[in-house]
Length: 162
Image: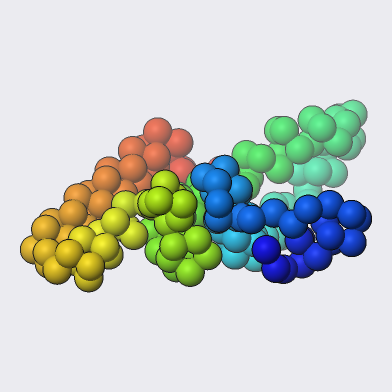
């Protein structure tokens, strides 16, 4: 009931939101926190990728009469692809294992509806004291992410560059 968003809502005459009373608002708080934490990494990656694009390609496109959209679609995106695909894969893996956001922001509330696999593994290990089961569960999570990363890389041919 406290915080910057609820302070603005109250200042405008609204009723403060109880963020963790419903699944939808708790999920929105978790997603907003994850986006907030992941934004700097993605911007640094994209900035590095943009700086690696040769300006000659844009100059040639302008001489040929390409508009901004065509330059973006046919020059910027293809040149960013080898940079973006691995960054997206890393981002998905980090999000998949974002224990700290779920545990610290919402605690999986309400009633465990915002749990993810890694927080479930934590609860299995440290609340139920089933360490072997939690280790096996974590190994399955690792295999899921390994298979995802492999197929995502193969499907997008991310390692091929221009």
